[in-house]
Image 1 (tube, rainbow, N blue to C red):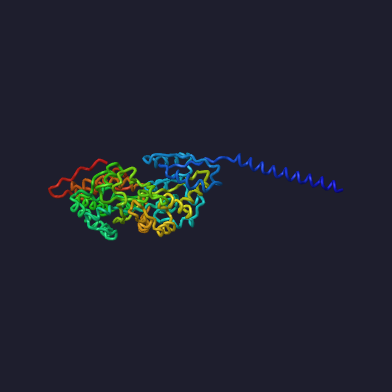
Image 2: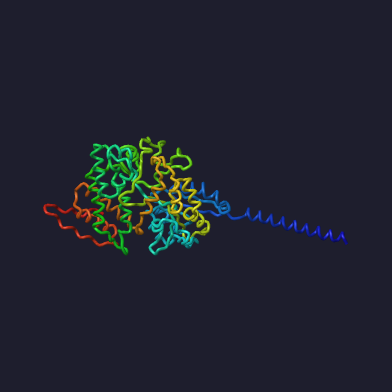
Length: 461
């Protein structure tokens, strides 16, 4: 009897062991045979790829173990149109980046998924800056793009030039001298006189446009028609004309070699954003800024201080989007959540990569740490940008804004030199808009010729 019982027990244990081995074997087999997912990610630079590989993938092993990322890198010139072409053709593109100027095209495209379609709830976005949400939202109020960074703009000015030519040593006093367009222009004139023309206020007039353009955002169009007032256009034109009279511009193109050299020596200030002056919080010797002494002479390094410009502005930024036909929405959603909603993850990026992330809570916390930025003479950049971001509010731009702005900029030089009146300049601007976009505006009425002056012929569009 005892022998039979032992035999039955041995058989049961053997069956149990075989079953357990079978389960383990099947689990290992299923894990090995789990299908690899290919995620197509598109960008115009390698910054996002580096952050994915450095921060996201190591911290999400279970999600990413069977994900293979197909990186599609493209040049910034033509990038927007290439993305739209892929979307409209139904080609695979699971995640793609866009900057603030691309936003109207991406949010307005029906093939771009809303954040809600990805499973990202409104409650997850409450710490994002309002203006970044506006830029990522379509005309129906549906948010499609979620920004990783906020990129509020400031002026960086040479503290040594301020002391030498203006007698100013305190940021508060310099801020007063740059807080309005009237005082900004007066400062440029004083700088010219006191430096004997050696130091210019800015490298070019186009840099000013960042500030004025943000203030004009959403004002070009109303209900699908051009609606900008003549006073709005005249505001910009008069600023440039007065600064031209003050000999404020060096006349070099932004970000070419002459511009770098000018900022290093000979130009008082330039329009800047967080992506232009990053440094490592862990090692202040590791400067990733474009003003690194390893790339340039470094004459100006550490001599900058910050000020708010007359009008606040946003310059750059990275929004994350997904196509509506992506079959990997859960993976895409987790990536977007991490980079644009997850406070812990965004704090990690802010400190490790010196990004000004799109999270008000994280930035307020970091501003309290007083992290010194060596480019800015040890100033706390997080506090500077937190203050700049608070003042930014503007309307959603249209797909026409950038083109209309360019047509206005094309008229600036002639007016600034006194070669045309304000009426003629605005007429030429409106005429060229009508020629390019007859569907959104009416042919402008030519201004009456001034006494003893001949009205110019309509310009070529």
